[in-house]
Length: 382
Image: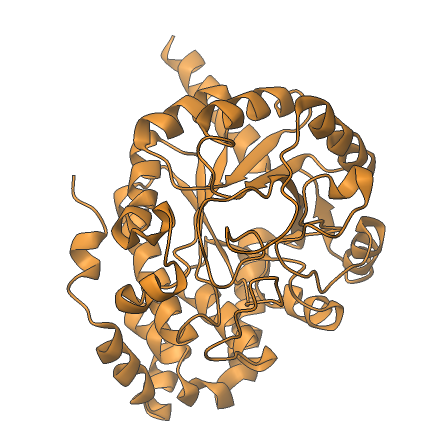
């Protein structure tokens, strides 16, 4: 079995950039009128030429999402276990060259965080750390997952890329989902943003979803850090990556996120800023390209934006997030990875959802349904 690298290497970043800028209004209309859209239709829908069609895109995206997912919204919370990191990344507050106090939670401290999160009702947790193999490596992750599996129905992980066998080890411990963002698909400039550490290996990171697929992960999340390079080109390659993965590892479910570069201790400014209208455009384009992919919106975005954008294609949201180790139980904000924009409580988010006739969901029901289906199949065969 090959990897996405073989497809990726057939395209040049600058050539895709030129193609996006050459899209015409008639190209956009043709793509909008299709019932099934290719990755090249997606390219048309994220082009500057598509912005005048944003209202039509939003209407189609909302209708498609309601038809496929109903008025349900999954809620999750990130649980930051450690801010220790051996990488230098120009955009991250956890970067090795940033002078902040470092903290890794021990089991007692993890359970203190759990107590707060469970009181809020969360049953889906996203574990996040910096990339420091010696301090927060596979053994640490396995212990944390086994500790948390008694408290949460769905456990996701956003940490350094691992090998296939290591992912299999964590899946056996109770891991359901892994989020791995390429940050940027600009191979040459990737090194500028990641000058030191294991993360500087572009292809090792690019091959991570393939290793996850081979390990048999239930769900994986993709995305690019919007602002590092041209968001349109990075989004095109993300869509192409998704298309390849769905075709190759068809048993796995997929989600996409839209992290815009936020103020951080690293100080990196966006290279190409994305407006709110353009983020809505991207959300709708992804939904029109892929009816089944889950789309997630984090607290990086403002209250005003999230209150309107979630109706246009989003299926999961974080709420009441803290981006520092111990943030829920201790309330400290000095060790944050990036600044939160939507600081409302979990209760306030739920109220907004219910006011708009949406149902907050606290766990990933697909996991339970899949287990039930496999059980019933096994019973029938016996």
